[in-house]
Structures are given as structure tokens and as C-alpha cells.
Image (cartoon, rainbow, N blue to C red; front, side):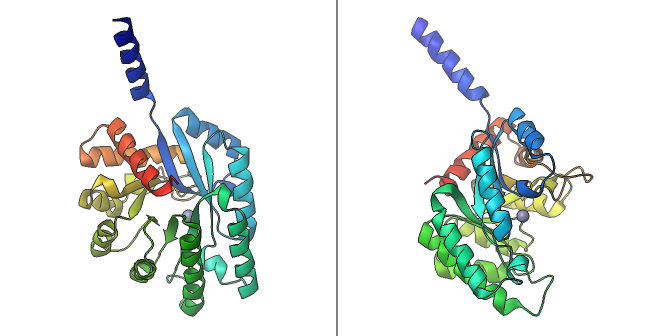
Length: 267
Ligand SMILES: [Zn+2]
């Protein structure tokens, strides 16, 4: 009897321990980092992947992952496609080496990809650099966190051809045929907290199974409350909306998303 009681208490305690995960933000460019990490932990946002966008940010990202290791901050290193354009080939290659050297300290390669919205003239250079990052992810066996604005089809095509399996499409703006393709590939779409008002992301959640979803904030950008900086605690807005659309309890959404997270990021 005593044993049973103990077991029940243990189970209910287990149940209470919710974990929420922000798989994509930029802590290094947020203000009041101490405070927002605490805010996140207080609401059980216990895993926060902060993404690098260029060589100097990547160093800051590594420092943050070290400083806030206990708070669940983890590093993804990469070069944002627009930032990549101002770097020389040697600088890109030396950053790839920097990432290689720090492979034990990182959870993923990101934020990398293609952005054809802003610059129409330098697509070739972006593609060349993106290939290098895809190959690096394969070499290090790390997931890819992908930015694909205005180049969704091409990004998917390149990753498919490389045979990469652990892929997170961050803030995916492509159409529903491509969303289906991502799901068929068993990749993941990370749903930003801006789903609170974004019909596009609400439609994605309606369209595909929870097995293909993760959650993110892209903090400090895309505040779901529309004013001020976004922060990882707001990833709860993604969970709430998914729970509402899928008609699930938020605890069950959290459990599912955690399982998905482990599939991609656990090694
Ligand atoms: Zn981002």
C-alpha cells in the first residue's frame, strides 16, 4: 500500500513537470538576457536553442550556452544567408572550421539557408554557401535549422538531394504543397509564437499532424503581442494555439513536442 502511494505520488509529480521548448531564437541580440532566461524557466520553458547568424554572433551564442547551461540554453551555429553575402570564401571556410571545432558544444547547425526576397543578384553565392552548411550538417550529424524566405522550394530540394533527415524548417512561409512535402520527409516545422495572429501558421497546424511540429519564438523578433521584444517565454503562445487547434490539452501538446524535439536533437 505504502509502495503504491509512493508510486502514485511519483507519477503525479512526473505529470506536473511540464517542459516547453523554444527551438529557435536569438538570445545574443535580446535585451536583459538574465531576466528573460529567468522568465522562461519560471514558466517551464526549459530548453532554449539560440541561433547564430554570423561569426561574431556565433561566439556570443557559445558563451551564452555555457553561461546558461543549467537554465537549458543551447547553441546552434550558422551564418544567416544575407550575412553570408558580405563574407569572403576564406571567412566562410574558417567559420565552418570554427563550428567543427565546437561540435561537442552545439545542438544544431543554424540559422542557415537561402533568402531570395531581399537580394536578387547574389543567389549563386548563397547557394554555394548553403551547400557547404548542408554538407557540414551531414559530416557532424547535426540537425539543420533552416531559413528559406522566398526560396522554400529550392531549400527543400537541396536538402532532399543531400539526404539529410534531421531538418527543422523555421518560420516556414511556403505554400501548403511544400508543407505536405516537409511532413512526408518526416522533417519538422517550428511554429512561431506569432501563430497567435498568423493565419498562415494556424493553417499549417490544421494541415499536418503534431508529429511534425516544434515550437519557436524567433526572439527578439515577431512578438506575438506585437509590441516590444519577443522572448522565449512567449513560446507558450505556440503551444496554446496548437492545443486549441488540435483540441488537445496543453500538457499533451508539451509531451508530444518534447518527443519530437528528442527525435531531432537527441544524439
Ligand atoms: Zn531567426
